[in-house]
Image (cartoon, rainbow, N blue to C red):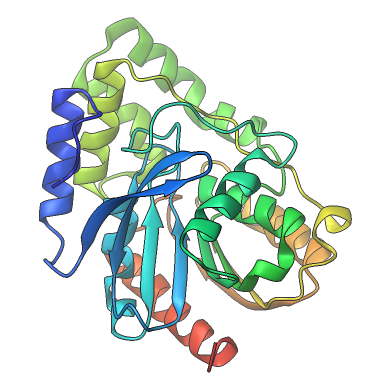
Length: 288
């Protein structure tokens, strides 16, 4: 069972998503030097670890759903990131001075993980890059799914979101919210859209600014192989620009997947991403 740190309607949807996962997925608090972190775990406790970092307002049960196929070979650890409408609290690390990386390092210390493979999706991708800038030796392989952290998008999201956001602010109802969310995820994940709406209705503070941007001067010490997934219709990160900056900053970029999809992809593409991640990890972390 999850603790009750969230408003009732948000808590209900969190629990529904958690209940949709197999019983082999367990949740618990982990004590760290910086306080308690709520995390989900799945897979053989003796298997190689994949630390999975979720996106903006998309707590651990949603990302864990995407990664279930990998639990046959990996121990998946997916923490709720502080400040992101989960159970690790609403006080986020500072996005500057490697605050998120320091938080992640303390979590790894508490879990007795000297190093492991990491996945970061969207906002979580920027946290992974923050970790790569502070403690690159603790990353054995890195997968970045539609990641923040390489640049701060401005005109692309404004062009798609300005009018829908203003319309939602004026009306604050479900139909206008749906229109605001369509460029982000369309009909790709109804449960996640419902969670976003509940978070909005509850008035939870939104931590929108990820760490970064990061370039070669911050990431030059990362020796781990890197996988990158981009989306052609990404509302935030233009795929060509994202690829160019990633190739410039990460000389060990070893795998690239381009999806003709939105920032939050379809179920079919989510399955493909997990399959591609499994193949990437098998190639680059055998014996880790």
